Amino acid sequence: MLEGSIVAIVTPFKGGKVDEKALSELVEWHVSSGTNAIVPCGTTGESATLEYEEHYRVIEIVIKTANKRIPVIAGTGANATDETIMITKKAKKLGADAALLVAPYYNKPTQEGLYRHYKSVAEAVDIPIVLYNVPGRTAVNILPSTVARLLEMKNIVAIKEATGDMKQVSEVIRLCGDRLTVLSGDDFTTFPLLALGGKGVISVTANIAPREVSDMCRLWKEKKHEKARALHYKLEPLNYAMFIETNPIPVKTAVAMMGKIREEFRLPLCEMSEANREKLKKTIKDFGLIK
Image (cartoon, rainbow, N blue to C red; front, top):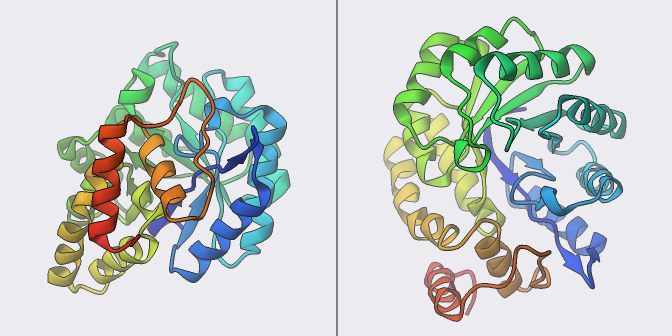
């Protein structure tokens, strides 16, 4: 369930509301394009700006549209443990296959606090749990020793590593072995992470190039390393362009340029600067995504 190209799907808006039709169409596109699983309501899905009922509705639409063809890993993390448990319980009830839990943000818990947070959620909700370590967003780093300690909880099965630190990823894999699936949380680190023993990526770039990201992961698994490496370098301009402004602004703009959604954000996110928009447009045009 937790390998290959897992798209952190954008949440399309229309007139200030979730565009349910566009969201369903995106899911269908991903299923047909070889995406291995979908994460609704992650960072790229603008979960921080969704109200509870919207959050649940996005998860529900993705689950219903995917219809068991590929797994759905619902983003359910929050910076309060009780809130995280509440959202995760709802995601399980809706039929999610797993839950992605970002480290509690802003309040900067200690390693002991992180351990107790994840342990409490794992004990409260019987669903496969993916830890999400992204210090650039949360201001806290889930250390490898804490990850290893959490493996006493049988339903903690994977981690999305978005530190960009291959030394830390290597230490997590060394300590946890086959007991834990390690996934890249940054598209530019996917290839080196696969080489270290990771199993795939929770991807931003897959929102616009699902087939290529999926193929790169598949080729590595098939031990066709040179072909996988070639795709890595082909994807690098896209990976860079997805972060020329705060994610998900560039990727949503790109998906809109491709005609799949409206270009609409919720404040405090807003449209790209004109200079960066032109850079993005050139990159996706050069890749062949638009004419």
